[in-house]
Amino acid sequence: MKLGIVSAIFDQSNFEEMIDIVAEKGLDCVEVACWPVEKATRRYAGVSHIDVTNLNEQTAQKITDYAASKNVEISALAYYPNPLDEDLQKRQAAIDHLYRLIDAADLMGIHLVTTFIGRMQSKSLSENFTEMVRVWKPILKYAEEKNVRIAIENCPMLFTEDEWPGGQNLMTTPAIWREVFKRLDSPMLGLNYDPSHFVWQQIDYIAPLYEFKDKLFHVHYKDIKLYAEKLKDVGVMATPLNYMSPKLPGLGDVNWASYVSALTDIGFDGYSCIEIEDKAFEKNYEDVKKSVTLSTKYLRNFVL
Image 1 (cartoon, rainbow, N blue to C red):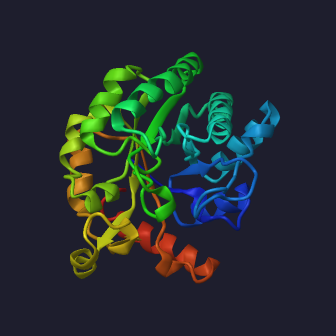
Image 2: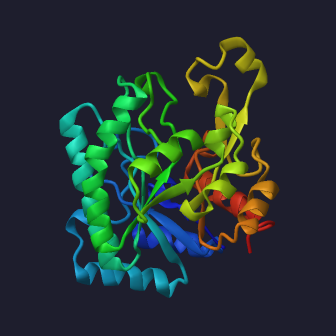
C-alpha cells in the first residue's frame, strides 16, 4: 500500500513545488487536483496543479518525469464537481472537464480519475438514478475506450445550507452503491473510499470494505470529530458542520488501526491518500505543511 496526499491543500504551490513538499514529507504518491483554471466555488476546490485543458504530450511527459525524479507517483487526477447539477450549463461544464481528465489520465499513463457522481439536489433518489444512467453511461463508455478507471468518493457534499436539500453527490451509502453498480455495470467504475463520511452518517465504515473490495480503486485518510453535546442540541437534521468537524487522521473518531487492518485483510495494495481539511491547521501555509508532517508521522504507524 502506498501512502500519499490529496494536493488540494497545497493551493499556494505550483506543481513542482507541490511535488517537492510531498517528497520532503516522505510520501509515496499524490492525488493531483486538476480543477479548471478559474475562481474556486468552495473550499478546497479550484486548485489546479495540472492544467488538463492545455495539456499536450510534451507537457505531460515533463510532469511525469518531474514526479518520478522525486520518487513520487501520481495516484490519480482529481476533480470533484456536480456532474448532475440542475443548472444545465454548470452540469455540462463539469462533464466536459471530466472528459478532459480522462484524456489527460490516458495521455499520462495514470489511468485513474477521482471525482463525484453528482446529484440533483431537489429531486428524489429514483429520479436521480434515472438521470445518473443517462449522464454517466457515455462517460463510462469513453473511459472504457481509454482504459481509465473512475473512482467516486463517498462524500455526500451536504455540509452547508447551499448544499441542502439532498447534497451534491449521490454515492453516499452502501445501499446506494449497490444500486449504482447494478445500473452502471462497468469495470471502470469504482470507489474512492473515505471512512470519515460514514462516521457522521452513523454508518459502519469497516464492513463495506469487505463487501466492496473489488470496487476499491483508491482510498482516503481523513478524520471526523463528532461533538456529542452539539448533536444533542441541533439534531441530525441540522447541517453537519453544526455538530462535527473534519480533523487530521488520529485527531477524530475514526479507528485507523481497524480501518487499515481491514484493508490488509482484503489485500488492498493500492494508493491511499491523506485528505487534509482541518481548519485548526490553516492559520498560515507553514501550519498547513505541519499538518502534513503530523498526519504522515501518525499514519506511518499503519502504512509503511
